[in-house]
Figure 1 (cartoon, one colour):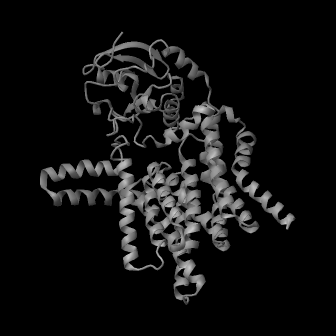
Figure 2: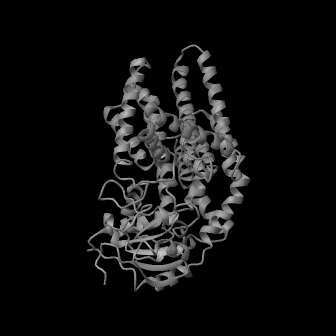
Figure 3: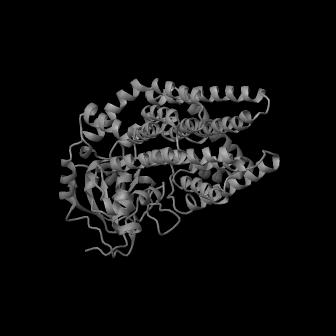
Amino acid sequence: MLKTRFLRGMLAVGVVLTPAIITLLLVYGYVGGGVRDFIPHHYPLDDLYYWRQIDTFRAVGFEGGYYVSNEQPAPADFTHFDPHGPYFPALYGLPARIAGWEPYSPLLFNLATVTLGLALVVGLLRLDERQLIAAGLLTATAWPVLLYIVSGMQESVHHAFALLLVIVFALTLRERSALRPGLKLLFAVLILVAALFRLTWALLALPYFVLLAERVTWRSVLRAVALTGLLIALAWLLTAATTYAPYADNLPATIQREASAAWRADGAWAALTTTLDLIGQNVADNIGFFNEGLRLEVVQRYQIVALIGVLAGWLAVLWRRRADDYAAGARPEAVLHLYNLGAILALNFVIYTMAGWRDYRVIAPHLLLTGFLLVARRRFWLVGIVIVTNLLLILPFKDYYLAFGKMYLGYDHAPITRFEDATRAHIVYEPDAPDAWCNTLLMDYHDSYAPALIGLPVGIGMSYFVVPDALETPLRSRYLLLFPDDYEALRARADLEFLTTTEIGDLYLNRDADCAIP
C-alpha cells in the first residue's frame, strides 16, 4: 500500500513538472539560451503588446495610456486596453506587483500557469498510476503547450482553462444531475470567466448545461440552449460591448461595417446577402488556406479532422449498442468530444482565419481538453491515438521550436537601452495628466513589435495605426513615433513637433493633443 502510494506520488509530481523539465531542457540544451535571455517579441504575434499592457497594469492599474487601434478606445471609459480587453493584463499584472515584471517574466508566468492547471487536474481528479502515465505522455507531446510557454502570448492561460474544464466535465459526466448546486454554479462561472479571455469558450456552456439534466429531452436541450444564450450574452456584455477596444481587421467587424452600409443603402435583404457573401468568401478562403502554412499548423489541422472521424466512428458504435450503463456514460462523452473539436474547427472556418497560427492557437486548447478528459474517463485507446498523432508532429515541432526559441532568446538587449536613453527626456508618464491620451504613444503598426519599446516609461500606452489615412484628426495621442512616409501623410493634418530620432522612427510631440504642453 505504501509502495503504491509512493509510486503514485512520484508519477503525479512527474506529470506536474513535465512542462518545466522539458522547457528547461529545450531552452538550455537545444536552443542554447537561458531563461533570462527571453525577450517578448515575435512578429506578427502580440507578445510585446501584452508585455507592455501587463507592465502598465502592474504599475498603474487602469490609469495607464491607451493600447488601441486607430485611437478607438473601448466603450467603457475605465479601461484603456486593447481589443482583447483588460482581463489578461490584470491576471498577470496583479501577481507581478509582488513578483516583479522583467522581460523574461512571461516565460516564468506561463510555466507557473500551466503547472498549476496540471496540479489541479492530478490532485482533484485523483488520477491513478495508469492515468498518470497516460497524462505524462500526453503532456510531453502537447506541442502547443510547450511552444507557447516560451512566448509572451496568453495561450498558456487558455491551456490552463482547458485543464480546469477537464475537471468540470469529468465531474459533470460522473455526477450529472446529482452534482451539488454549488459546484453547478461554480462550473458555469468558470466557463463565463474563460469566455472573458476568449469568447469561444462560451460554446462549451451548451454541452455543460445539457449534461446537468437527468435525461436528455427536448425540454432539457431547450433549457440548455437558453442558459447558453444567457451566458454568451453576459460574456459579450463584459467584453465586446464594454471592455474590448474595437478591432477593424476581422470578419465580424467587416460584416458589421459592410452589412450596415448595405442596410442603409438597400434595406434588410441587401444586408443579409452581404453578410452571407462575406461568410462564404471567408469559408472559401479558409478551404484554400487549409494546406498552407508551416507543417506544424497544417498537420494539426489534419490531426483534428482525423480525431473527429475516430470519435464519430466511436459514437456510431455506441449508438448501435443496447443502452447499458457503459453506453449511457460513453454516448454523452463522445458527443461532447465531437462538439468540442468540431464546433471550434467549424467556427475557425466560418469567422476566423486558417492561417498565421490563428487556428493553431485557438484549436490547441480544445485538443488539450479532449486529450485529458479521455485520460480522466479512462479511454486509453483514444488517448493512445491522440499521443500517436501528436508524435507525428515531433519533427516540425523540433524545427520550429529552434527557430522560435532563437527569436525569443537570441535578441540583443542593447537596442532597449539605446531607445530608453534617446527618449527619456521627452516621454514622461504623468499620473495627474488630464487625459489618458496624454500618456499614449501612437505609432505605425509595424513598429509596435519592436523590442526596443520595452524601454518606454511604465504607464505609457502604445496605440497603433496600419495606415495613417485611417486616423481621424485632430489626433489625440500626445506622442507619435513615425516613419518618414507616415510623417509626410500626417504633417498637413496635425501639428507635430519633432523631438528626436530613434532607431525605430522619429519621435514627435502632438501639439493638437488636449494636454498641458511644456
